[in-house]
Image (cartoon, rainbow, N blue to C red; front, side):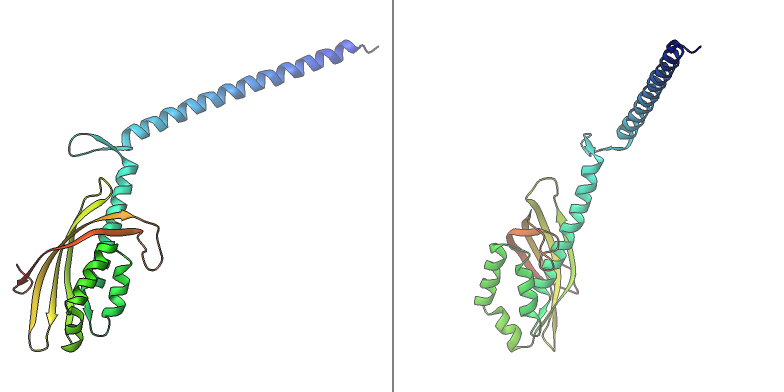
Length: 205
């Protein structure tokens, strides 16, 4: 004769098995989680920081961001100086229009000053060819706005003669929205200034 007690015992055994399995699964999960946290902590401590020149620790992610920023700044400065100074009678309007997208009113004011001084008229009148030979920039990416100083070497071909010049420019850069293709790096030159211009011999001061 069957009694209900046997079914109750079976149910209790099943419940105990389920509880025990749940406890074991929770314990395994907790142990695995702890081990993963320990491993992550060790990896973070071992590789997520670098030592600065003054001995302070800098997050590796920040270092990577600064390296990428520096690359973009140097590319932005090279692009701007190429557009603004590598010009001739056939391309100066197109190049200068592109250069003006990369700087603020300080660049526009310099452009207007050069235009008022007849720089571009002489370019057309005498068919001058101004070519950039070398661009070297120093930048500070620690704090925004990012200061820079650029050494630009360019030549002016006057037909019979070719003169070489060294120009030192300074300014700052701020972040703006990227605008393709006019401002692909999302940077804007401010406080732009032509600090020093001198004639050189074969590109050497």
